[in-house]
Every structure is written in structure tokens, then in C-alpha cells.
Image (cartoon, rainbow, N blue to C red):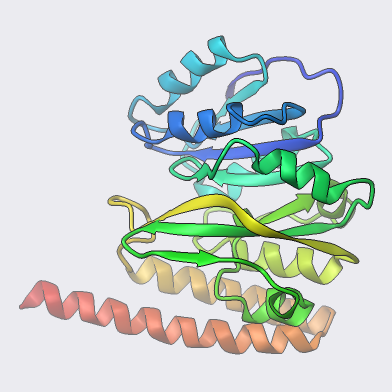
Length: 276
């Protein structure tokens, strides 16, 4: 793996892991949204998944401007799960946030507010408010009702790693990682972390802006690959069910079966559209 590493000598409060793949038009905004934070006890880990455009050059330019960026580059495209795992291997922060390179932190005080919310309590998870923009508009603010283990592990409409702030110790002591070379990698990671967690807090403010429907995004157009990777998640969940049963895992298995059917329908619609 090609990499440029700037030494980090002390543990930071937050590690921000930024996934980057062919997003030359967005990556600077993502990094600057972190660098512009009032709260400075952070490290930024940018993992470039073998981009073919100018993404890497832009990150290297920002590395020369700031001294808290670690830039890592995969030698081959390994997809988002592997990108996040690479970031986790390098992370030293007490807490971890995941940021896709086309998304950004909503304003310059969100990390300061998160730090104060965490305080000295050290919750395992902080559930974050976020705003969706792009081809749809929505603001999602977590509540006590939507932060139960059952809801977050199995019923959440947005089971995404980026909508939570994770205590790194929770991830490491349970040896939790993302499945690699697979779409929908968040599903298993979030389920495992939520079920192993012992405490949480709620950030009832917008932390993160998520861009939906970006052209060339791998999830914009549904193909058989989407269906295949959903089936892989189902197989893993069934194996997990045999080893460590929870009521939540039955809920999430039923949910993933419905998603598999929906994605198959979407593929059929695409085939019909192409043949018309």
C-alpha cells in the first residue's frame, strides 16, 4: 500500500476516517469541513481506494497545508468496507467518525458539541443527527424511541456507520470490522457494534450532510451485484444467528430478505427499461 504518514504522537479525541474514490470534485470540501472545526483534538485519515482521477493529488496538496492528515492509498480498488478497515487499523482516536468523501460535516462546531456531549461519560455510541441532500431532502434527528437496540440494530431506515460516533475501544475489544469487496457493508458492522454496546448518547443536532443520488455512485444504479451482496449479508446473518441468537437478528434477517426482493424487482425494471 502506498502511503504518506505524518507522525501522531498522542491519542486524539476523534479519528475522522474519510473514504475517497474518484471524488476530485468533493474531497476538498469533505476535508476542509473537518479542518475548519473549532475543536482541534483530531486526526484525519484519508483512505484512497485506488482513484483514477485527481483525488490523490488534491489530498496530497492538503497534506502539505495541514499537519494532522494521514493519507493512505490502496494499490487496488477494494471497496468501502476495506477502506474503512484500513482507516481503523491506523486510527488512534478515542472516538471514530466515518465520512464519505463526497459528504461533509455540517458546520464548524459539531465536533466541539460532540466532545461536550461525550464529556467524561465515555458512551460506546453517540447517535448523530444528519441531513440528506441531493436527489432527496430529509433531516433525521435521533430520539430515545429510535435509539433502542432493537430499533438501531434491526429496524433503522439508515443503518449507516457514518450516522454514529463510535468509541474505538468498543470496535477493537470485540474485533469488529467491515466485510470487504461488498456493497451494504454497514449492515453487519452496525448490527455487531450496537448489540455489543453498553451505553449511548444522542446528538440531537445535525452533524453530517449526506449526498444522495450522486452520479457515478456505486449505489445509484441497482444491478445484480447489489442483489448478490445482499445475499452475502443474509448468509452471514444466518451464520451469526446460529452462533449467538438475538431477537434483533430475526428482525434484520426479515428486513434483508425484503430488501433482496426489492432489489431484484429494481433489476427487472432496469432490464425492461433498457429493452424498451
